[in-house]
Amino acid sequence: MPYIHIQITREGVTADQKAELISRTTTMMVEVLRKDPATTFVVIEEVDTDNWGIAGKTVTELRRLAKRPPGVE
Image 1 (cartoon, one colour):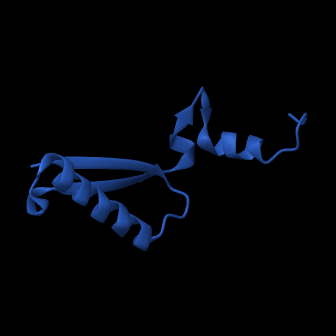
Image 2 (cartoon, one colour; image 1 turned 45 degrees about the vertical axis):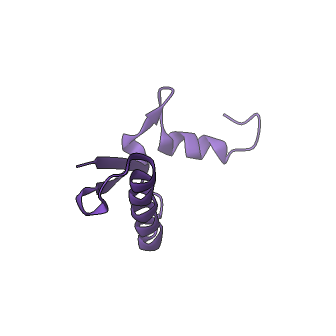
């Protein structure tokens, strides 16, 4: 009984995109591991960018910094 937990930042992922992630992930488990799709669980968790950190900074801050012109701090 596979349980797949997908975590993504909360940045406007649509219901259709989530449905495709669930469908393709289930298909992958069937094709690669021969798992029964009826017992394959996929959970998508959206995490606010303030709660996701990379290299000591929140994703919110990293996104803000990426929008700045070069040389501006």
